[in-house]
Structures are given as C-alpha cells and as structure tokens.
Image 1 (tube, rainbow, N blue to C red):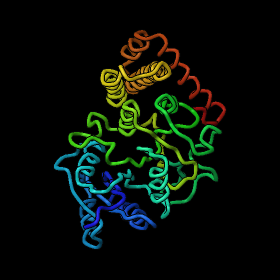
Image 2: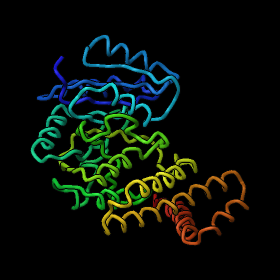
Image 3: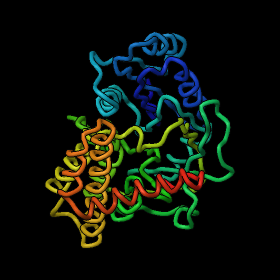
Image 4: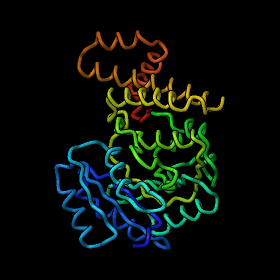
Length: 320
C-alpha cells in the first residue's frame, strides 16, 4: 500500500455517540491521502464496537483498544505506533475538521519546512452549531499566519488565563520529528499532553507554524476547566514542568527561561486554588487555611479568584 500523507489519530473514551462524525470528517479530507487510527481507551460503552464497524466499512480506518484505561497520552502513543502516514494529525473524538484542512496544513509544512503546523479553530456546541462568528483565537497576535517559537508557545499557554490560549489547538506533526521509538506523549499527564510534547519539540529546535484560517471544529462542552481540575491534575503539571526543565534546561534562551518562570508561578497559583477549593468543598477548613498560608503569593491569587466569583454572583455576571 502507498504510504498515506496523513494519519489522523483519535484517542476515544466513551465516544460511541459522536465518533462517527469525527471519523467521517477526517475521511472526507480532499487533495490528501489519509488513514484514521482510532484507539479506544478501554471505554465502558460501545466505543470499540463503533470503531470496528467503521474499520469494516473503510480500509483506511484502523481500530485498536487499550487493555486498561491509560488516558489520552497512552491512547495517542498506541495510535502513533500504528500510524504509517508522513504526518500525524490529532483529532479529538468529539470534534471534526473541514475537508480542505489537512491538505492546507501539509502544504504549509512542505513549503516552510515546519515540523508542527496548527490552525485556528471554530467553536461549536455539542450539536455542531457555531458558538461565535469569529475563530477561537481572536487577538491581533493570531490574526495572521506566523511562526511560533518556544517563548510564544509558553506565554500563550497559561492555565486559567483570560484571552487566547494556543494549547487548545490540534497540531499536525511531521512524523520524522517525533521519537522513532518509546513514548511520544507523557503518560503521566491526563491533560496538557499536547502542550508538553510541542514544548519539547520546540526546545529541540523544531519549527512550528500557525495558520489563521480555521479548519478545525472544536466542541465546547458545558462546564469550565476550573470545575474539572483536580489536585492530581495540577500536581502532574508541576511535576511535568520539573521534567521539562531537567531535560531541556541547557537549550533554553533567556526569553524561554522568563516565560517558563512565569508559567511555573501561574501553575503554583492554580494548584493552590484547586487544592484550597477541594478542601473547602470537603469542609476541611483547617487544610484550606494551611494551604493558603504555605504560599502567600498563591493565597492572593486564590482569594482574588474567590472574590471575583462572589462579585459575579452579586452582579449576575460571569467574572471568571
């Protein structure tokens, strides 16, 4: 068989209801040859059965299943191991893409030599209706095509930050830029796995490009990230920051170091907020006060966050 241009990898968890739409959008890609690799992350529903039905209908679809739930990093690592394309494109199981998107990304990578290409997104609800008349990234910074260096990638990936966050973008990777063997994604992470993969590649000197024209449809589910984060998630971020610094410290520029220091401070603030919130919800007020006292800068951030929530309730406006 001819090697496909792009392998679209899908980590699927309880995706029985919407997996078909995601796969269909990838298979409809024009002017580029594709395969779709679905890895079911040991879902308790009919996700694997749905993936097998799609594979039976179309030889371009590959279906596999993890023996136990390993998270999106483990599922994507399995998918990359099964993929044969020159490029790897990440697609979440509840999202979709336009037919011309992959060809546009590949063309840009071939023209510029970029190892990673990401484009703007269109936010949709769970029924597929657009939530905004603009793209996901709205600032002047991302209003046109541009290169993204490590300092920019870090600066626009601060958790809980208002404004543009480029960590949500779903990248296309040149397969040759990824490790040939071993884990590509950090399996200790259950979220932010794309952030650390891209950051590591940029630290190694790989090139990243951004296209302002949106071609990815990002499904915005109900609920904010602050409601979903748990202390184990934010602690995993802090641990990943240490691993990243240990692995790449010698390669970093002064601007990279400044951006990393700012991000690390932000992560510590968010971790304290999440730990304090969990203690308050559990009525462990002593633990909450102890956490606040352990880091006064984080305490200012946490108390400010709580104050904005309270003010928002009084004003009947969402302030966080």
